[in-house]
Amino acid sequence: MPKQKAPRKQLKSYKLKHINKTIQDGDAVLMRSSEPGKPSYVARVEAIETDARGSHAKVRVRWYYRPEESIGGRRQFHGAKEVFLSDHFDFQSADTIEGKCKVHSFSSYTKLDSVGNDDFFCRFEYNSATGAFDPDRVAVFCKCEMPYNPDDLMVQCEECSEWNNNRGG
Image 1 (cartoon, rainbow, N blue to C red):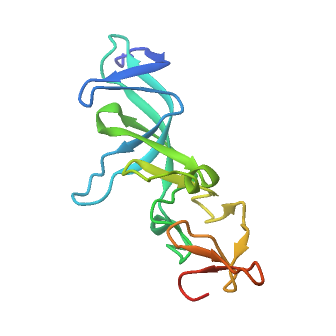
Image 2 (cartoon, rainbow, N blue to C red):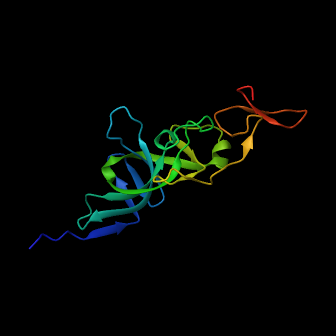
Image 3 (spheres, rainbow, N blue to C red):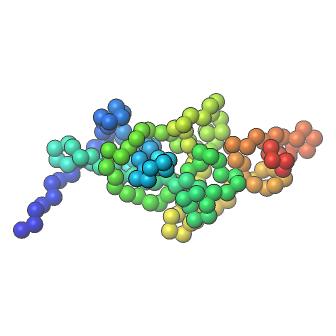
């Protein structure tokens, strides 16, 4: 007779001893990459579970993709700290969490006084199978008619009120 799996216990929060932080459902976290030198992955904790003894915690995460990880790749209007909330879910060992981070809405990100290493923003959801984005379009600014990149300085013309970027748009 095959050995039965031990029952798993669902948790609301879990203390990560290796980083001295507590995570809970909904937290944005940085996950260690298996490739040396590659930046940490960004994910949202959807669920936390442990074995019956309370050890070997696993997290169910929903991945954020960076623009270069998407089918279309990085575009001129993507910010350096931009991520897309994907439809890609996974179970990972809680030991691979390197820290907590904050994924802001686009609007709140543009209002930050200073952007820290653990600050990101999301303005799109991403379908990893089709490469489709939701919303599939965003407001455009400037004569170049590109979406706003928060890394670029935008200046409003005093004569025509048109927004222009620092690339001479």
